[in-house]
Length: 361
Image 1 (cartoon, rainbow, N blue to C red):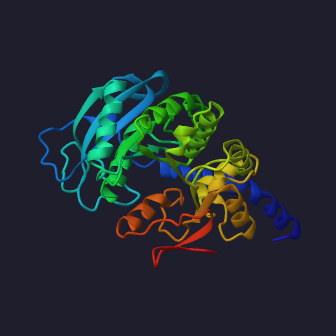
Image 2: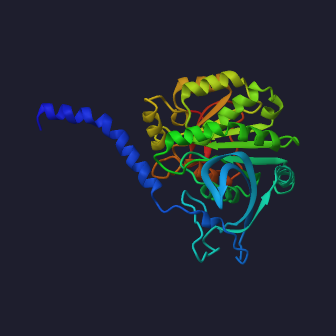
């Protein structure tokens, strides 16, 4: 190989890397994905363990929830049978003739109005969540369909033994790998709907774990900022915020924190520097660093986290999916098997998968 050809090849590599990452993302998104028929109730199912999920969405309804936005929020409940051993990045969706011993199955569902939805979630927080009065609101990420988010939350709730009453907010993601910018606009469109839901869920004094994954973390931070600017500090004080692999520009996050000021509970950020999906997001954004890929071992990151009252937790040691973007699922499973809790102090930590503990870098 000549020196010229080597230089040409070297010059092509930076251009090829984003394309290779895009191919990985497309391959991950092109696996068989569930259609809306998995939401059809099968009341005859011999259910093993049933998890009730309360779902709110600003997706348009046309027989089933679509990828188009709606200006009104719809409310539902779904009772989902979850078999033992349903953990992992892959969700065991039901087939035409479902096997409840190995697949998740919707056994009942129903339509609710806003008042009955808020009343039911309040009662669930006080009854199902062991009297803690705590709700868990899950906001999914980019390239996610309604049914995928619903079954993922049922899986998480089963793993955590329903220590919080599970609620889903599903914004109108297009559910297609190439529609990144469309999903970002859909997330921005959903700020008011999610803000109103968070306000309603905490109106009775309930504590709310607000969990945002990927672009859902971006939406969560937008909502926190909107709540602060509208003077709803009482709502913010009831929130415990977790951002898993957040697809947020680091500089935008710093600006949002400047607006928010210190939260009553430090924001928890789960990161992994080898997250390929966030690597692609960074390249699409002109190389700007993403919050979810920050290295917790960096002294600068640790110092910034302490100043901002944020916990940065590097979970790179957790077994990952091919893109390394769903690690939080594995973390939930590990923590569900012990009584470990994250430290209360802000700063940077590294998760040790062997001891299942958090350590300072």
